[in-house]
Amino acid sequence: MSQNQNVFLPNYTLGAGAYEEVTEVVKSYGTKAVMIGGKKALAAAETKIKQSITTEIEIIDNLWYGGNSTYENVEKLVNHPSVQTADVVFAVGGGRVCDTVKVVGEKTGKPVFTFPTIGSNCSPVTAVCVMYTEEGEMQGLFFPSKPPTHAFIDTTIIAQAPDEYLWAGVGDALSKEIESTFSARGDQLDYTDALGIQIGKMCTDRLLTYGTQALQDNAKGVSSFALEQVVADIIVTTGLVSVLVINDYNSAMAHSFYYGTTVLKKMENYLHGASVSYGVLALLKMDNQDALFQRVYHFMEENKLPVSMTEMGLDVSCDLDKILDKAMSTNDIVHVPYEITRDMFKQAIIDVETYPA
Image 1 (cartoon, one colour):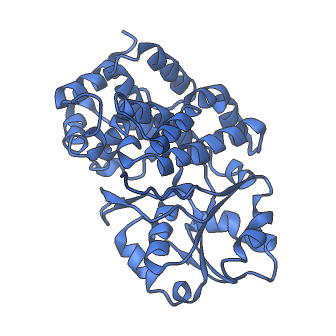
Image 2 (cartoon, helix red, strand yellow):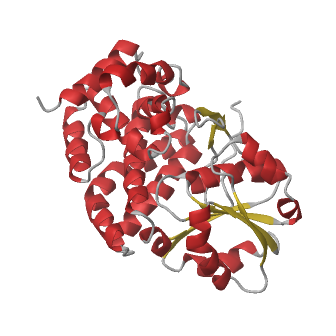
């Protein structure tokens, strides 16, 4: 007899008026909320959230999350009197805010509600958290027992955020279908994994169809149809895949490349999704998916996502080996359809660097 599967699917509200639903959704979980976020995120969304809720929900405090998703910041928040008093926890900000607060929710047993203020990744709806050391290097993954209770995705707030976040979100989302189908290739999939892989097949074409227009609208601060489609792809589609599939199928070589870059101090503030998108090109090159490589490459080139290490401020001659040292140690390239050697990884990057020559 097979082992039971517990599947907790993400719930979300998407649109320009997403915060109008907060009271109705949250009130059955408690009446006292503590808001935890990034400084810029709180400045962008706190007032709108407070204005949207009724007196049935009291926000007892707002707290800075600490600047990175570290276990040290988690412990500070877990021990904060306002967190201990609150019934529910609001995570306001980007991926590292959401990851930090998801761990806080798991450790305190309090429901977490996310309010993504940027469209950069799927953290607001997933049951996985990327944790870093205090020095900024990727430390490992933490897996909460379930995803956040509900995500309120206000596309007006996201449209008014700096352009670079949606830009990086597009880059990150480009990896989901490509990495998950690669990692699962040749496996006999059970129903839940197969469902997740199938949902992931919505990612790439929709990004390539709506991505350019969405980025142009984001630059104007406009919450358009194209922007909503892309934000939903970045946060919801990729998040559903993450929740449904085993972690082996959640990432592959593109994320290994990103984790490799975290060892370099100069990459500390470079956005995760942009690094991942370059890793997508390397994966497609290595796997000889030439037609898709060309489509993704030209889309990235058009939208100024990095198609060379130089565009990321990296030097092949002095940085690549350091990146590969870390990349080859990650679990992301363990469950793959064939062994990825260091030489293969390196050659794939060199092939991207020399394309289209």
